[in-house]
Each structure stands twice: as structure tokens, then as C-alpha cells.
Length: 117
Image 1 (cartoon, helix red, strand yellow):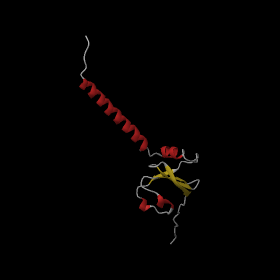
Image 2: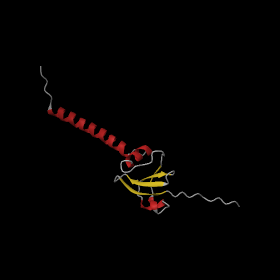
Image 3: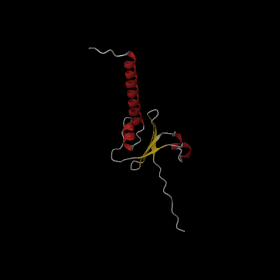
Image 4: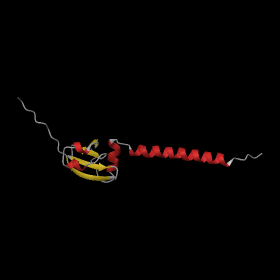
């Protein structure tokens, strides 16, 4: 005996599979985009330039460009990643939205002067 499957059932199953595949793809793509770990950012930037391998950089994400203090960082935008290599005295501005290194410059670390009064 052969069963006949109604076309609406086939269409409903196909639609459910399409939705499930879409949801899985959405979460996979967003998990890769939102990986803000130092390792993930340095691996991405390393595709564009050679980075020091004997130092783990500090990683900052720009959230308010109006609050940056140096002229060098004034060119940053919201979402930009800033890698700071203290040992090599280098800072890298990377813009993930366009996958580009915006600028590379020297690190200037101000040591506050302590007065003995």
C-alpha cells in the first residue's frame, strides 16, 4: 500500500527546514562577527600585517570617539578596535566594519608626576 503525501505537508516541511537553516546560519555568522577577544582581533589584523608574537596587546573598543584624548585617536569611530603594544610602543587602529587598518602610530603613555608637598 502506497501513501500519498499531500502537497501542503511537503510545503510545510520545506518551510520549516528553511527557517531552521536560516536561524542556524544567522547565529553562526553573528558569533563570528561579535568575537571581541584579543586573540580573534589579532588574528584578523595579522591577515593584513605582521604583528609581534612575543607580547599580548591590550585591546580597546571605541565607544565614544569624542572622549579620546590624543590627536592620533581622533580619527577613530565607534566600533573601532585599538591594539596597544607597550613593549614595541605601537598602537593600531583597526575598523572591523570595513576590515581595514586605519592607522599605526607610536604609543605615548603619560606618567603622572607626583609632587611631594
